[in-house]
Image 1 (tube, rainbow, N blue to C red):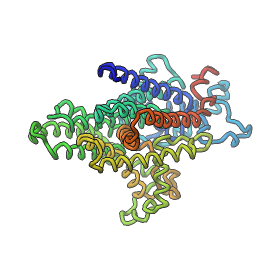
Image 2 (cartoon, helix red, strand yellow; image 1 turned 90 degrees about the vertical axis):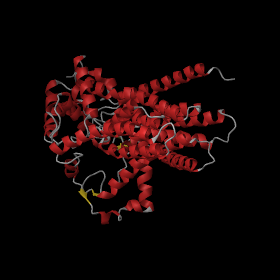
Image 3 (spheres, one colour; image 1 turned 60 degrees about the horizontal axis):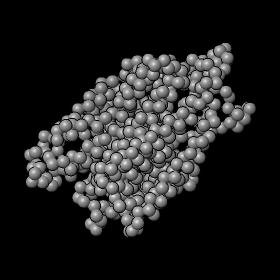
Image 4 (cartoon, helix red, strand yellow; image 1 turned 180 degrees about the vertical axis):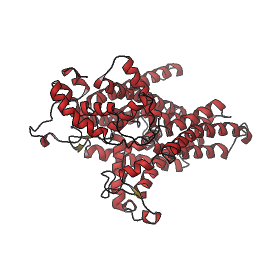
Length: 507
């Protein structure tokens, strides 16, 4: 027997808040367990956060600041890049901040000088995350935080991002599937246990799914509203702008705005005549385009190109291929697809961390991630194409937007893979000329997990009872939790992490 709708809704929201708490606690624990600085350019992002905290906007690649070089040298660990067997004692040396003052100085100065002599290749990245991170860092300083405590304070900003993302996933699922409680719970639960390691690092990627999740909800609401309201259109446009101002690659997601506009104006209802759509849609386009145009103008004025990527490409030693050479890329072969797609999807789920010189991954986990993602995507598209499914027109359009969001980013990474010669760059490289950084797909996390849960629900829709579906989904979630716990567990014992900061006084 079902209880009153209001009571069911309260229980549902309590569960979602529990999922938010699970995501927040999980991100806090793993963020605290991993020391600084990881292999996903955390050094560069910390440098930019510190520059923005002082109000220094990069005008070129620029060198690492003295402050950032000090923090990187003092609190960095070799555990990401090296194995203990590479040291004479067959173990990692003690953290520099635990050494006596004279030894600390001798160990610190050469590394600090090296970092100060190097350019920061991430300097042209959009400013939104670094502005927020710099403000958060300044708040930590006001609260009296210094040293590694201050670094972890900035990293713990991801705790709030993870918890909020779960709620956004719930809102998206409830909007598209108002009468399907399985979707209301499964989408936020997948986001709560999503083991993407960017959330355990100081970098801009954790903001991407947050901003685009809000943009996606706004776009779906515009599809449903009759007529669309002006504040909703402006808010949606600003959310798209924020998505682009977090990560350069997210600019490709502006194509989703175009798809959404096509859906909106294709079949206007009698209540929503085409003339009533023009003002909200114009407001959406202007509110999205104006902040991005300002950013482009700043980039062109300071870096010499609209997206400020030219200097980074030159720094990394990449060169552009003529279009006639693109078709020779191995991605157009079966073996190339088998190398590109599984690694891309596996890293979308579990991230790209290296630990003790080896990728933090398992064959079983990676196989599950890429195979289940492939099946879910194919099944979701089939269910959208079949008219026999019980999806409304609004739900089909919403899910097509979700699929388009993810597919556009995959297509972008495939295009970047074929467009460049990578020279001596270690990643991507001549031997492995593929962009397989799944974190660059993370902006579309909410739409992707909406598709993933819908495919799961559709496959099991012929089961008359609900409990087998719940057990199977619970097993899936348990597998994700256990596998990421097993992989990340060794980091808890690192003498360089947050749990060991009280071992010695440090500056």
